[in-house]
Image (cartoon, rainbow, N blue to C red; front, side, top):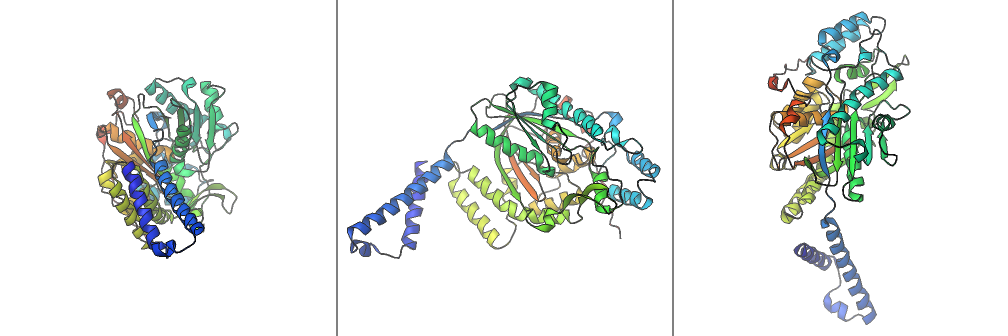
Length: 474
């Protein structure tokens, strides 16, 4: 640390030498009072520089992922292509033939398989979109995910200090956090935060919030995070094509995780976390927009430009993420930090897409499975291989797009394949206007019992599967 401070001081002196137009002889010829002021300014600048370095290097309390749990639908929740097509044909008063054909074409090239799950409310004719249906679906998926993480960790509800629930499009009263508190009889002093409208970045934003709370809290604190998306209120029965897309891509799911600032029984250690927001641009702001169509039917408008928006947002995000990754290794590789920072700044100035050395830093990748086109754009932007994208494509095939909970299903895939080793780092990313990246380092691989009750139990031996080629239509 002393060497770092000396290096910063030397850099500051060199910078002042170049920037100060007054020579040493000029200073000596000035009045004593002016010289004293100049010396004081130099000392303040040097002291500030050293203080900043010490603040960066000061060891903050580490944050750990104790464990996680994922909802797994029963066979009765499964929706096959034939079943979805039959329902579409039978609901002629709600969905016209042209809209049904559009969804069929979209499904054929979506990369989604035959074992995904939907709530019971979507099996009714017509589908049930009321608040009671949404609450029943939430209780099904959320309680299952929380039960699993509590069972895996051996913790009790009273051991939880903070609860965060992320769900974008459904916000009932009482809130989902209150629903969980009521079900598990959490302590009266538990802190709760209900995140809505955050889209597929909800889980990673919740991790960032939990990190700040745990950094500020005393040792031994625990945060329970639940991520889900409730489909019952999302089903769209109009004819606007951009609003029909969620009917095809989104599926039922939920995941939970317990974070702590104590390494006791931890599975992963949290590394850099970076979030960049591009909602200031009108095109990005409207790429996923909840609205009413011309007939007054509410739905989610997923713009056809969403993959392009995700790719463009990735450029600036990678610069910020590259700098954060470099800073995280400051204690070990100061020179590499400076080189990485220079390369990132040069790439940003040139308008290019800076790519950190991902394959040198990470062994596994979990990219949000927003759709095949989104995955391909991110793969191209990050220069990843098909093997790097395997967990993302297979999760999309087996479970569909489950919003921000999907990333934990991808982690479960990697572990079910027995690929996670101690010391491995995996990179999680959600693209879009709320672009987020998180790094986790494996502290302890999963015990065999985890593989028997995880979301991939009973089907992991069939994966990876060969996905059909994308059919380009006029």
